[in-house]
Amino acid sequence: MNIIQPDMHEKELVIRLINGDEEAFCELYANYKNRLIYFAMKFVKSYEFAEDIFQDVFAAVWQSRRVIDPEQSFSSYLYTIIRNRMLNLIRNIQQEEKLRNHILSQSIDYDEETGRKVLFDDLNLIINKSLESLTPRQREIFKMSREEEMSHKEIAEKLNLSVYTVQEHISLSLKSIKTFLSKYPEQLIDLFLILICLNM
Image 1 (cartoon, rainbow, N blue to C red):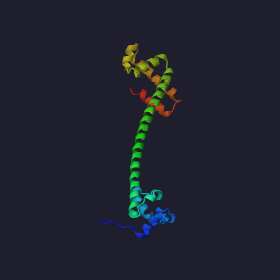
Image 2 (image 1 turned 60 degrees about the horizontal axis):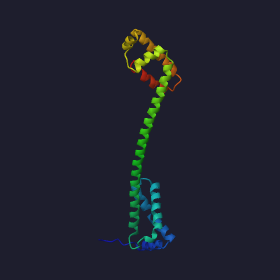
Image 3 (image 1 turned 90 degrees about the vertical axis):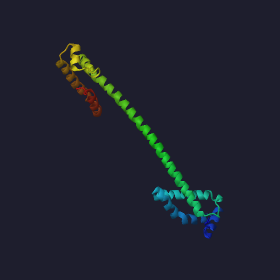
Image 4 (image 1 turned 135 degrees about the vertical axis):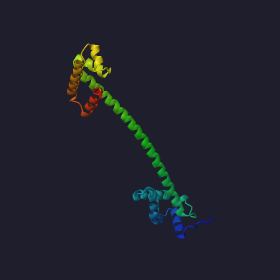
């Protein structure tokens, strides 16, 4: 197996780096900046992001300089670090995306369920208030039609009324309810009217 020998000038810079020479660090930084940034851009597709990663890598190099082996390729050492950083970054992004999607899906489910319950409660409240605006006979016939789902004929037979009279009571009830609903938000009114008119 062929072993790549480190460049002598670079090796001297690495030895000086290990000993805390800031000028050697800056020279190595400048020598590898473009190469490592463009290498990182293959993964992140953003120069600014790649530059941040490069700077993070060289900050780690400075902090761990005392464990660097000057006999080994400094270039290989750098590419190994940045490759590992990129792999960890990609893994973290994937995990965060999964977590974000999970939280988002839970939030959506919760919001939809809560929204439906609030809307249902609001509609029930409106229904009860609107029915109070009806006469006792209108309210009785309306409930038989909508809550008990009785036909007009069945209501007429049960109350000993004509079918026409039942229809008139329901028609007047709907007009009264529409008038009552005029003070509520339009979307609630529309939904309410759809619900109560399904059997019309």
